[in-house]
Image (cartoon, rainbow, N blue to C red; front, side):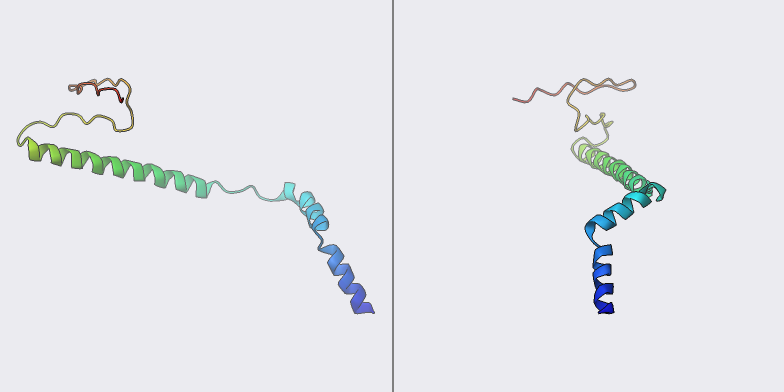
Length: 100
C-alpha cells in the first residue's frame, strides 16, 4: 500500500501543471541565453559572402581578359542592385536596360 501511495505522489509531482508552476518560479533566476552561436553564424555568413564576392569578381576578370587580352578590366556592375550607382574613381558602365 505504501509503494502505491508513493507512486501516486510521484505521478502527482510530475504532472504538467506542477512542472510549469515550478519552472515559472525558477525562470527569472536562470542564466540568459548566450549570443555566441548567433554571432558565430553571422560572422560565418559575412565571410562566406566576402569570399563569394571575391571569387565572382576574379571569374569576371578572367573571362574579360580571355575576350579582351591586355585591356584594363572595367568595373563589375553590382549583381543584386539594379538602381543607380555612382563611381568615384574610374568609369561607370552604361546603365542596364529595364527588365520587361
